Length: 193
Image (cartoon, rainbow, N blue to C red; front, side, top):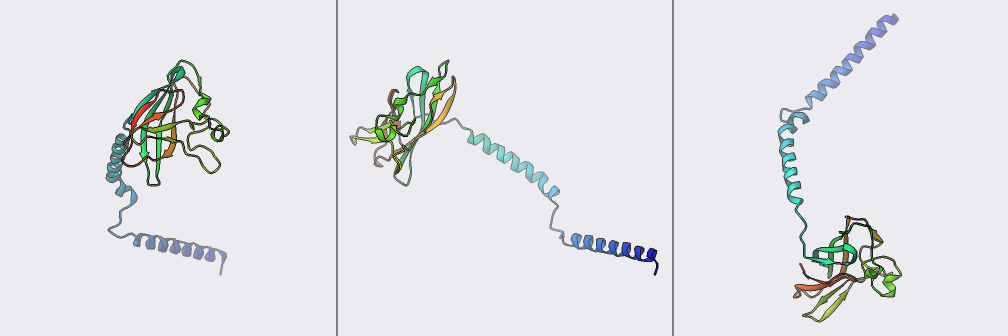
């Protein structure tokens, strides 16, 4: 046997292996299967249109339950006050600086309870007042005494805003309205959901 004959035989075997692989691969595609490119052309456009519709629907402006005016152009817009199954009420909103300069967030927002104040800047001084039930609700704390609120906010640039939250024990189900109080801000009445 010559080297030339062996080389030709190897090339022939290689071609047979390739052809067999291609035949098996093509045989695996049934007539009901569609290549990804054909399958996705119309359905992809429909799903993209559907997703853009969903995006347009979710970009609704946030609900405003109350706007509390503070000092130096600070405003707190309450956007939700929601009860959860665990017996908590979370108040969420947006703190905005409407002034023409950066504003320092007042330290008084943390309140005057020693346990909360020692953990730094927070909204731990916030309270809810249920005038019908004659009760005041304070911000909850974790086992280390840290308030369950947004923390660490020391200043806010001009024209800037940031999302904040505070968590309280939930008033009874019959209580549908409370007065929300935040130190250095005017109080506001909010509806609970």
